[in-house]
Length: 218
Ligand code: GAR
Image 1 (cartoon, rainbow, N blue to C red):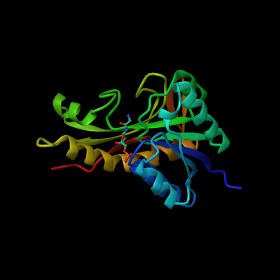
Image 2: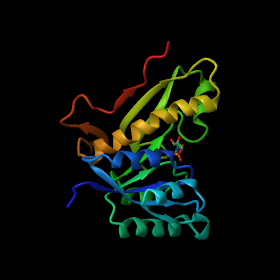
Image 3: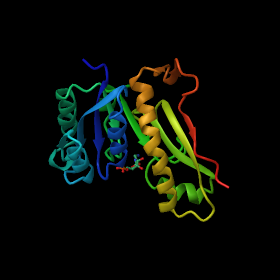
């Protein structure tokens, strides 16, 4: 029997980060496998990508439930039915209640397109450009009740170039996201990164410690 951690991926849309995780899990020896993909948006394009990869998919439309809690009860049940060890939020654009977050504490990862704690929330690239930062990037972290916070597993930095539009910066960051999420999931699923006192402790691999910098731009 495989020791790979069983992963449920939550999406709301395009699913390109999910696709990068699916790709990573194809590598023999990768310490995780994706068991279930769930979208809160029934026509999310990512569902078809997962389906074509032979992964079980489910749409749980949050609009069909009278409350956040009712939606999350269904979500929680689907994840438990699939017997998942870890959840990866990959462009999952739904705020979760404290109850759900605590039920999956230290077992739910999220990717955010900024160098947290900078630029939490939406419109990160517009705000990074507006603030005039020279570096932006992406962060994979464990989910906590406060939005876009929690122990940081891995971050990748990319430059913000002088003439960047938000779309150009988003594309550069997304390329880094597709590398970072598989690395971060590997760190967690292998046990090389774990939470202690609400911070990440790394073991075994001093060289692989969750910090990545894009190639130098001239
Ligand atoms: C990604 O850029 C992800 O970091 C962001 O949504 C995009 C989803 O793209 N997530 C958030 O902003 C969450 N706060 P994808 O569906 O192609 O992976």
